[in-house]
Amino acid sequence: METQHQRLLIIDFGSQVTQLVARRLREANVYCEIHPYNRVDANFLKSFAPQAVILSGGPASVTDPDAPRPPAELWELGVPIFGICYGQQVMMDALGGKVESGHHREFGRAYVEPTGAHRDDPLFHGLFEKGREEVWMSHGDRVTRLAPGFEVYGTSPGAPFAIVGDPVRRFYAVQFHPEVHHTPNGRILLRNFTRLAGFTGDWTMAAYKDEAIRRIREQVGDKRVICGLSGGVDSSVAAVLIHEAIGDQLTCVFVDHGLLREGEAEEVVTMFRDNYNIPLVHADESELFLSALEGVSDPEEKRKTIGRLFIEVFERHARAVGDVEFLAQGTLYPDVIESVSVSGGPSVTIKSHHNVGGLPEKMGLKLVEPLRELFKDEVRALGRELGLPERFIGRHPFPGPGLAIRCPGEITREKLAILRRADAVFIDQIRKHGLYDEIWQAFVAILPVRTVGVMGDARTYDYACALRAVTSVDGMTADYYPFTHEFLGETATRIINEVNGINRVTYDITSKPPGTIEWE
Ligand code: XMP
Image (cartoon, rainbow, N blue to C red; front, side, top):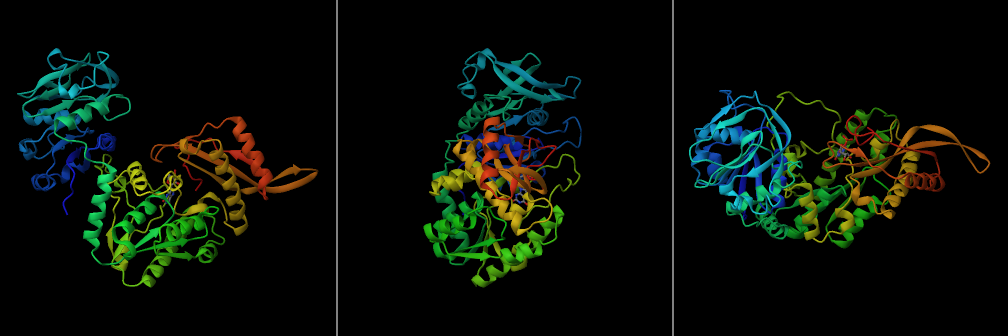
């Protein structure tokens, strides 16, 4: 089925920040998709039928004969086009302007002013209220002659063609990056472009929910679907959405690997089976996993053991559900964006992530991925729209291998029990102090050392633990959270008093990089 909303196409030329363009547009209630330049040909343009196009930045130089370029048909589509940095250069180069290679590199903050003739242009609605706008420049090449039909809309001291436009064709281009944080009003500029391209801002979660439900019904028909529930936001939202679409044709399989947090398994079961009446298989496989992990202390071996068993167990339970044709997954948009590889080389594996890749082919299942167009915060908005409780929606991420990777060294049932208690106290402290939503992720790791302490008059010889709490936007980089000393002191006291088995508490103040968020 065709999607109902207006669509904007972002052509990616390999900028590090292309995803931010999409974020800014989605915030302006515009539906957009990112596609790499080498996948966008005339046929693609025809089938995608964008109502406007944005050309991203990128590391190449259009003065290079092999530089990435959009297909010539793009300029004949008759829709508004907006070029950013490299996108501006590609536009000028293709339409008869001139770009020169960089003796004049420009990085960092600059101030743009509108030219008199265009001060009141709809592109500038709500902008330049204080005369000039701060923008972020990052380019080597620059445009030295405009293509015919273009006029200068804005200049900066270092960039005579900071903003240019052809009002007849509605082609616009900027030398700076409006999508980044450092261009504070860049989002307004992008929004204005979409509005003058005729976008009404029809991308809302309420509308999307109805559309997604219709699409699921159409894809699945009267067949049956299984969904692996982890208790995390993505799989929970996917499950509730699919249940709304097809009711009891959906069965959820919740594999409890014995590495969940305190009360987590009960919470998932209560929520889905009891509150939502979603058919749910609660597979308590903790014995299987914990026995397989006995004696394993290498982090990669832990991850691989858990990943392999998870697939085996999931497959067994899924087959037991009976005649199923589809597997639902909570895949998100950032996982499906095909990025232009700038370096070309394969990136190094830091950690083997836990996923069920390969399972659908093996079981002959088709995939239902109702979240694959959404960013994480949109998934949360959809969850709210579906009435999921805030406690579920706002949850910190939790890794697939669970507590196994928060228990460096050998995993024992004893250590897991201590870790669960300590983690619950830490999270309780964070909630009580109203800090939960400011923190990307917080947890306790139990360390594989015992230390000497004194409680009352007696000597203790118990485990040490580390508290970890970080802020982050996407988990790719992170900073440790700056708790007050009072908070840390109070938390340490509570953990030592309330958790048998821990007599020393430390706080991990490593950022990522060089650390990672999890300990393994
Ligand atoms: P690291 O430790 O690599 O973690 O800085 C980044 C984010 O990813 C989560 N994480 C995982 N999530 N399966 C997952 O679903 C995994 O195997 C996995 N390992 C780490 C981690 O919790 C953090 O949010």
